Image 1 (cartoon, rainbow, N blue to C red):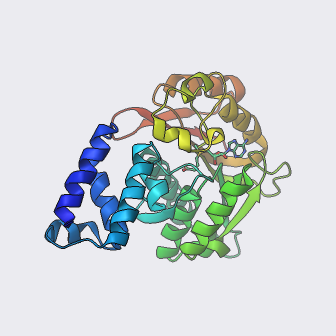
Image 2 (image 1 turned 180 degrees about the vertical axis):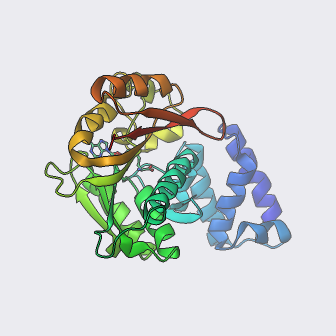
Length: 298
Ligand SMILES: C[S@@+](CC[C@H](N)C(=O)[O-])C[C@H]1O[C@@H](n2cnc3c(N)ncnc32)[C@H](O)[C@@H]1O
């Protein structure tokens, strides 16, 4: 069979299974089976496909038709312009989380370049709580290295899932920043923080428990504990807020990803648990509340 024939067959198979992006997914899976870029398929629809590649394509199509996320089948997902290894040990990085990385990078740069830091000042301390695949911590480390200021920042990445941390370490190694991030398996943050963090970023689970099972079937392949935020979705984030007075430096900033309907709830929660700390919510590209900014007064 030719590329065009196989693609037509694959698109049909995925459409029948309910895929909303059947063409793109079939193209990506056939490109993977052939070990070529997707553009090659589009440029050469006439080339014949060997039996091994056909079998591998058919097997991947069945996995996708059964609901498995494309990122787990392909083994990676692009996030912030970088390829992250993905497998069921960790949540697949989502595009909306790029907003958090961007805000964290801006804040770190502001702190490092806004006012002169006297010679001998300790590196800026940053924590990524619930690092999962390491998407946030690794992206930040790569960005800071590109700017030539990697050594001026210490990054701690935590997760209470040891297997997610393994995946995060692998991604850090893959991007050459494993020496820039300290990975720790623990609940939220170290109990004895030592020097407090100036910036804390967290994309912790925020889906209400009752809604997790109503998410699209592909999500059921991801670790439930990466999604389930307790009865109102904010149980784990609330516990993090309680830790901030010990963990966040005076004048420090916490950036928390939230659900689209949690903008008011997060600031109410912060008002009750961290009185006097300003809380602001930024929206994502779709205009939904997505990022809470909590500042510890100086
Ligand atoms: C929504 S996922 C985010 C993963 C990654 N930061 C990202 O943005 O793609 C939440 C992560 O928090 C971790 N997690 C859940 N509860 C935690 C806790 N109490 N302490 C540390 N990590 C936790 C989960 O294991 C999961 O990896």
